[in-house]
Length: 235
Picture 1: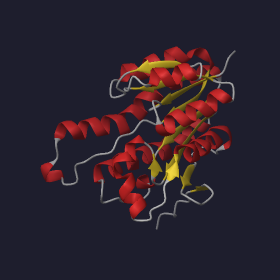
Picture 2: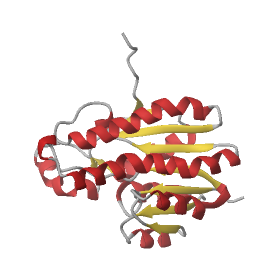
Picture 3: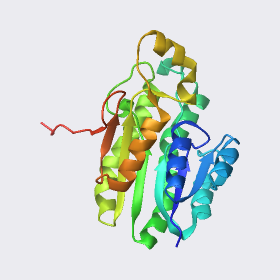
Picture 4: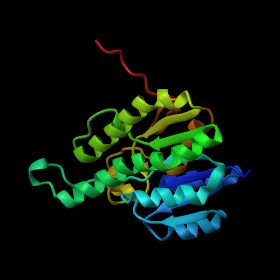
């Protein structure tokens, strides 16, 4: 049976780079994004595109169905920033959209994929979190909240899933030069703030998919080797 993978947020950036690596390794990839450019990316690697907004749970269902019974890799990578910093002036529509992509779509992806992975005897799931999942980032508190939620889900589910041979982990990159950060790229460079490339993160995602222990939270920062985050014991 041909092995398959689903990668969300794959029209560019980290998701595209991950899909290219997995396809190069022989997996048939299903690429998911609301941006129709995902169709071109999928065609270039011999994969399948699913165009849709991941805030709709049916999009995850369609992606998993397209991957078929050979699905054994799931990369829940889709994410968006928030522009709202003060809850008192929060635009609720924008807020719901950010939470829908960053948080709900991770649950929807697991909901759709876990029955297939269980029937297949196991698999590996990596969620793209962020350094913002591990500490507070005052420049984007809503994004920070959603990434903390993702890490909480990984911490709570990785143990139970590992007993079913499903490895659930997270990759937590620092600033990455992708379309998501393009608007601030020049400002970061002028301030001398180093940025990761999408390929840097994709390599870490692939490594975690293949060999990461369940519950790994792999921190990826520019100029340093990736390192698992170590939780401090509760007092």
